[in-house]
Amino acid sequence: MTKPLKAAVVVFPGSNREGDVARALSQATGAAPAMVWHADSALPPGTDLVVLPGGFSYGDYLRCGAIAARARIMDAIGAHAERGGLTLGICNGFQILCEAGLLPGVLMRNARRRFLCKMQHLKVENAQTPFARRYRPGQLIKVAIAHGEGNYTIDEVGLATLERGGRVAFRYCDADGAVGGDANPNGSVNAIAGVYNARFNVLGLMPHPENLIDPLVGGTDGRGMFEGLAA
Amino acid sequence: MKARVTVTLKSGVLDPQGKAIEGALKSLGVAGVAKVRQGKVFDIELEGSDRAAAERQLSDACEKLLANTIVEDYAVDYD
Image 1 (cartoon, rainbow over the protein chains, first blue to last red):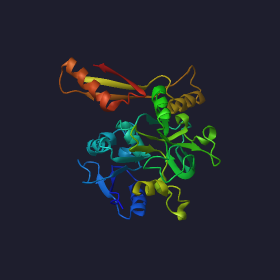
Image 2 (cartoon, rainbow over the protein chains, first blue to last red):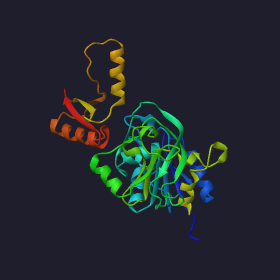
Image 3 (cartoon, rainbow over the protein chains, first blue to last red):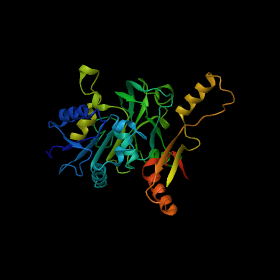
Image 4 (spheres, rainbow over the protein chains, first blue to last red):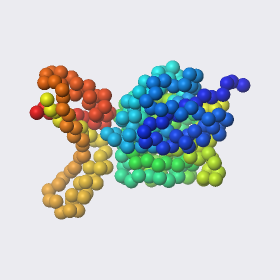
């Protein structure tokens, strides 16, 4: 038995899903994660996993995630990721990781302009990572989405690099697994819902697996991510 | 010294907000509107009066924060 996963959740002014992430991590690891304030300069010693939760950091001023990406704690998170430390950005956390340059691309305004808050099916594209190893390749999972700026955009060369490298983590699909078309809620290129960095230790995704960990609130398809990380 | 930084979406990048504004202008009966792209303007007061220094500082500001150069261009005008 290896030592239990030590997780930290970063809280920015305007984060609002940190409690959901903490609950999901507690359920999977048996221990509450450390909550880290954005103005801190260091992560708790021995941190294995850093999670940037969803919300509206700094009120989405300037661009979603732009101000948070320049917060003091981000230097420590960059160093953690550089060391190969696990880093997960969900929704606003994904936007922050892109703005910080830890993931490629950018999240633009939803193509159909509406804020989306609904259940959404995803296809697991790569199950060979610490984040997705509890899923099967091609598995459909049902999770929640809640965002106004989730339209993943990247230049053609960057897109080809992601696709060729197996770095697309999840794609939006319908209940039958058909990808794209009307099943793509926000216009993301190639229906991309989440991407990995080149070393697969940093994942950003718009959907909220942390909200689907209890049958009482609609399903448990999100548990696999946190159980995979804890394993 | 005062400067105005204008940040605009690169051509080809989808601008749903600009589209919505364009649609609203047309529904208001404003004639002659062919296309609208929305951008941002930052009016910045600089401490010094050295133009070359200002250019460096503002280019730094744009690259580091004001624009996301993956999808946005920026331009700086000086008073």
